[in-house]
Length: 367
Image (tube, rainbow, N blue to C red; front, side):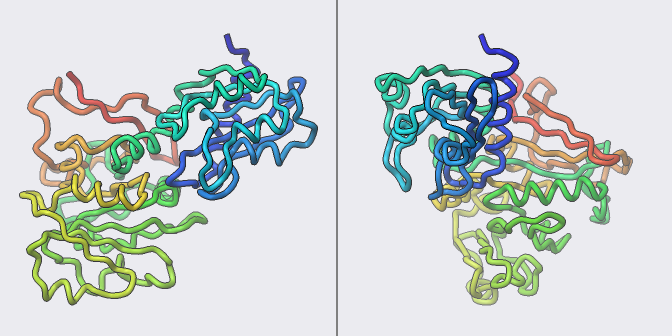
């Protein structure tokens, strides 16, 4: 149905979409073709700015009347912070629109009908898998109110994130650590448990790459976070808030000790494992956190898995072996009693980063 050329064009649109950081809006990319020549690319860079279709039309190096527009997501058909893209497409005189995937939650249905009524040829489904993956985070947030959760860790070949003494610097090499900071830049928020704060004293900021810091989230039922913890430092200079989720009955003295500009203490129900993680996701989702990167530690990862709250994994694997049953593993939850019931990754990708590997994929419970 689709030619190799058309697949290449939509692949360009997918790559273009990844340039944007429009959260809480979906990532969308577009390409305009005339006579087998790509005359424009566009993407939705930021919420409130032009959508991909309009950006591509503005970037066109030639007349777009009668041209074909390839767009990763069904064009919007409603008035939001920007006007409906369907009307922009019609006004530009685009003759054909090829859509990667449908809007998972259209604000106003009828986009394709509107285009067809205006004389535009419309086709759907080119690189549908890749285009759907682009908006998986947006789809979950729209449909559940919660962020899309990625568990991230650096592990050895035997699945350890630290030695029994807690040493973890550095499991992976520089190329992998740089990519890890790209993941942070890509996230709306980054989350760790207080155990990680006490063991590693992370700042949870973006370094090694140009980018902006995500919201920093700490799960700390009893407010054990030290007042001089790195995660609480340089808040005004970095411009990213810190949210500390604690149990409703946490000590008032500890609350007072941690209160400062840029730090928000949020009470949620206590859970045997610390705090109610589902409630935490509800709060984050209500604040338009669409992409959440969970960096552990082991007990936090285990909790997200045990309660089915993790969507995706990004695991950096180093060619090292700790060889110690007492060393910390990637996930330390209740776990599965049988391999048949274990979580597995599907739609996986493997990248080589120096001497390390990055394995990504979606979590799926085996049945």
